[in-house]
Length: 179
Image (tube, rainbow, N blue to C red; front, side, top):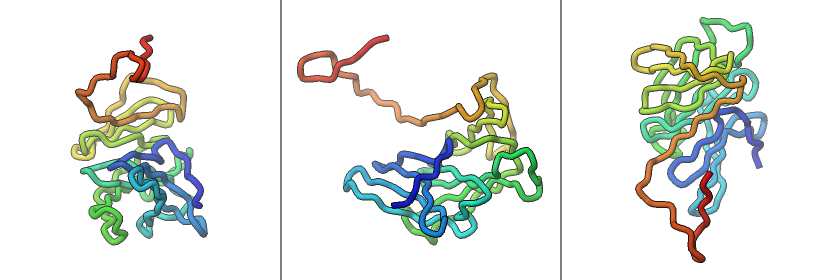
């Protein structure tokens, strides 16, 4: 079984499956997923230029309703602006290795980690100082928010709104606690 690669953006839930970045044989980066419907684990290979465990960091998000892999520089004090670019790869056809396509190369951003991509163009990230920043993929614009956390503590979770009510308390339903 592959080992899970932990990073703030290394897990995503998409189309009834949970996806993790993982380290496979020969320290090659892969995507491990668990299909909730079939209860089966499986793997997806990452692009050849993005499968080295040593060096850059990786993240998973959903973009344009596709599994998307982020490759970003190791957040260390020394960086080379010519080489420390973020790459965003999208899997156009689900599960097909040959469908990985690099859609963005982003200028160097001094970030600790990406958190998610919202509305298909706004990438939320944690800065190296622990604050929340956004990067607009369309406009190449950075915005810092006045939301400060401890370094490596920020998390962002996408959800789908629902009109389904939480059931009222009865002997046959779940208990709801109000705080």
